[in-house]
Image (cartoon, rainbow, N blue to C red; front, side, top):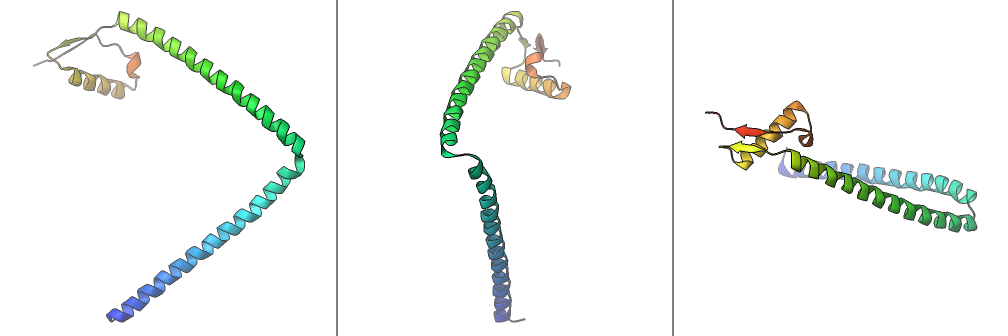
Length: 131
């Protein structure tokens, strides 16, 4: 096969690929329009304009209530977290013997991962270098 024949075969293959892509695009667009019109008609027929404005007002009120509830929950969680951090900081202390902080952090992470216990539930009393 000569260079020009390979060029023609490559061009034909690329044209076939683009035609298939164009056909898929047209199919997806037509299905989207058909399904959008079918689902859109059902929703429009059920709700008149006055109901839409009432629903919008209800949605805004519900959204405000939800935001207030989320904010309250976040504040409560932060308060509980602060209490837990304060008690754990008072009761736990880590003693490092000939170990730098980075190595100790890696050791604690490995122990947590291998035992599948969250790091905040583990208590380390001391980490020592054994020679």
